[in-house]
Length: 220
Image (cartoon, rainbow, N blue to C red; front, side):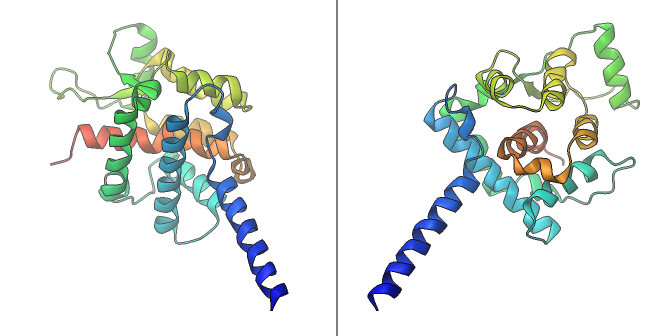
């Protein structure tokens, strides 16, 4: 009886440690972000992981993340994400916590359009249908080039190609999510998502960027 109790105790500890490891997506950023930042980044990534599992109806976490990149970057898009895949009680709660903690400002900044030739080229690639004179201005956030989040990623993430994709946003501005997803998809294999930080990067570069966009610009 004693041996059975001891075995159960050891299994519980092992399960607890494994779960903690799996959920510590932002752990390597602890040296340049504070404890509250790390906590909400992990929680946000877990929420996205759950949305992916529910959408794709399968348990392989790495495959789900890769499938999301493939679907988002397809031409024409072949995904069927419902609006509440992005904007729901869980994601709205995450945005609220990000703003209350001050983490939001460390990740994003409001996109201010300028008319440089480089930016015009990028925008024309992402949306040829844009009609500036008639289009209602969107409230858009992009990665903050001076924010602690991007600085942490640049210092601690080992995938140089994906870092180049992220930093391109700070140079060119509001790049279409499908272009970002396509660039990532071409460089990331399913096994690359064994690196928890890759999941974190995709979560914030694509999923919560879309959550922000739809939250600030609701579809009527």
